[in-house]
Image (cartoon, rainbow, N blue to C red):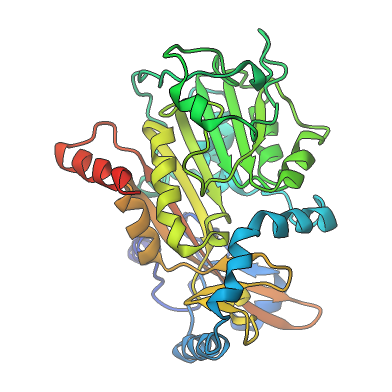
Length: 407
């Protein structure tokens, strides 16, 4: 039995399972532990974890993608989806408000790094993550406390709306003059979260489906601070008007991560964690690398970038009709919003090219079940954890410098 257990764990770590239906044991691993052991019981639960596709299922998925991507939208027609991207998302949130997506209460299970390790919440995070630290250290990375790095000396304007108590830390920073930001006096002033010792940024916060589960967890950790941004102003307003929004511990602001010239309301090199969950897929593939390169600069040495997004051949990709394909694995929905579907290799290449060390990179394959309609649907996501090196080697320093100087 011990041999079977070790083999199952080994296969999980490299993203494979020895067969579709496992034995009765539930391996301690990321991405869930509900394993389908008897195909006859498939409709007993709404979701099954670690599902491997048969050759026939994989072939059918590839064929479906070939069919729905055979007809591409003309390049001249694609321009509007790029230039008016924020407009389409604003319209989305105006219609759906905060009712479309569910709160991501699973975040701490998969990403215990969100919590500062020296808090009492550490025990809760460890419990929620299936005792990763004790039984699966290869997929759990303890918070590394690094020496404080010198903060970039930037000029933070009075228009940030700061007071001594930072009660107005949630002001809108989207109208800052980026040129003055770059050429301002070389002195460090207060910024939202300047007194915090642990800082998180969620990119693409939407209506706050990650923000409020995180804030709820951090309410007993006053030294922690959460930044969250979205380029849809309507989404940011939904976050700031929520009854659980606390400006003393959270700063929501409008920001387009694709515009490298726009300033953030905090210096580079101060973030402990960046959360990039179902966001990169909505960005044009040609701009993804630049976004990751910029986020790299925001992390402190030892900081973690936590990623989760659509994987290749997810049911969402298979459901697209002909005429919605923009480019390979990149589609536009009927409402004008876009979605890209990643492979594990693409994720590895992008984040490592930016100078980050890969700590986790897994394909999460699940079987979603509609018990009422007796329908089975394959879900595919990619999840990764990437860390900024504590100390850049001479070789990697030259690589990163070259990337940023040409971006």
